[in-house]
Image 1 (cartoon, protein in one colour):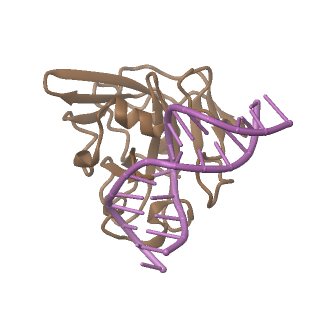
Image 2 (cartoon, protein in one colour; image 1 turned 90 degrees about the vertical axis):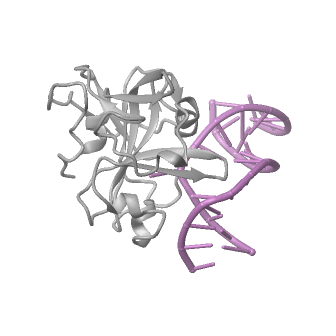
Length: 187
DNA sequence: ATATCGATTATCT
DNA sequence: GATAATCGATATG
């Protein structure tokens, strides 16, 4: 359950002398071949190579010809799995998020567990209440309950389906500036 | 309030 | 050639 665990963490973007931080408020999980909605469902291809690679890497792809979507790989080498960042900070929706943080194809494959141009950080913040709904914007396997968001956050993206479940706050895993919880998973 | 549409390109059939 | 993990604008109830 990497996807809900990422809620409340920070997405840090460094470029030039500038640093932006955005707290993750909405995520979606995508699995491998069992998940018809996942890009990895059709097997390993040039595009999905990152999803099959080591965990904690950025999977960035273009959607509808004009937006970028940012994911992080979550399963060990050889297994496909990822989490899509749907909203962070004030940025609502995956396309706006990547535009706001200037994330593009150049960052595909970058290691998000170590400080660099783009990485994940944990400042100790712990979310209050996590809601679970069906995923948004997909046609296949649209019924699976793999969308997670922080209740009460304004930036959570629009089409909210009914809340199927609520999760208790995730226990603190590890302290420190850089978030290294990605390799610890189990779905 | 929900519904439909256009923009635009990498990827796969 | 069809499709797509989106967004913003426009139309209609």
